[in-house]
Length: 264
Picture 1 (cartoon, rainbow, N blue to C red):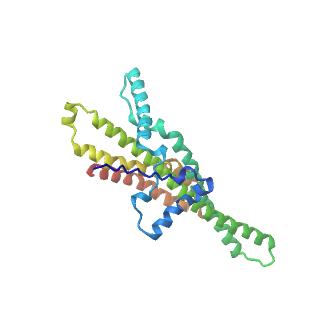
Picture 2: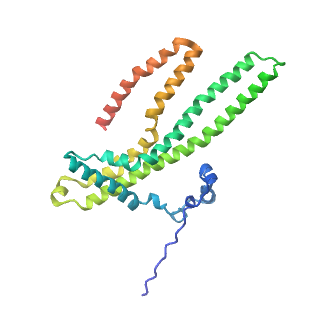
């Protein structure tokens, strides 16, 4: 019997050719949404993975940084740090996302400030005050723009931070898999299949959450300082009670996090 070769049909990912407007509003996903609206999606409906997200590409890139770290540590006679290799590999692309994080959090602060000015106008409403009416219109326009900016910025930021976490996770899985294939007989006796599967299916998934919240380590204190300054101007020293409560709960939350990690 003749063997029939099935040629795989490659579906080009529209994200590769999408313009800036399509990337901001995710218009390149509309064809996929139309198919999903009519029927259930199947494997043939999915697009090819972009070259920058392929496991081989990501794994080899991270491996090169790890090899450099091993050589550098060997010269300095110290233990190599895999964390340093990961940071050097992804810090440039991930640092750019900090700009979007800062803009989003700054917009969240500006919005209630504009709302406060708008409420003050209505508290002292004067139908003959045309200048105040003009300012109130600007405040309302600014609030509308803040809402629009938040809606757009939040989804762009969330999408790209998840992509950054996915890149790290896929690169890790590639390195773990290739490392497992190269284990010696003695190392195989010390490492079980369950440990490797647990690393691939559970541990590396934490990078997806890490990249989402990592920028808040430096944005959070700035945001707290600005909010305290605004509250001080509105209600005075009374605002420090809430801040003191938050500071008091931080060590408690840290301790609970460590306990969850140990028991897990």
